[in-house]
Length: 106
Image (cartoon, rainbow, N blue to C red; front, side, top):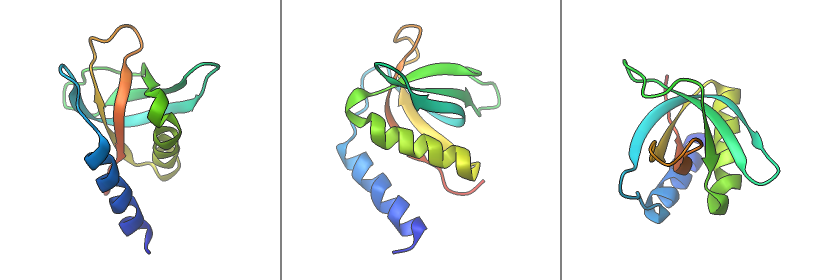
C-alpha cells in the first residue's frame, strides 16, 4: 500500500473515531516542536490562518491518542507538512488537542 493510501486510511479511522467537543475548533498548523513530557506529550504549533489565532503555542496531546498524534506531529516535522488539529483554545494555558491529522500537499 502506498504511503498516501496508508495515511488516508489512518485519517479515515481517526475521523470515524474522533469526536469534536463543544467549543472545539479546527486549525491548520505548522508543528514547531513535538515530544513526550513526564506526564503528557506536548506540541508547539503556529496557526497558518491569514490572521493566526496563536503563534508558537504549547498544547497537550490527548492521553488516549498521544502516541498516534505524536507520530503525526513528528511526520509533519520531518516532511515539512502541516497538521489539522481539533482543540478548544479556551481550555486553560495548555489546551488539549483531541484530534490531529497530517495534511497532504503544501
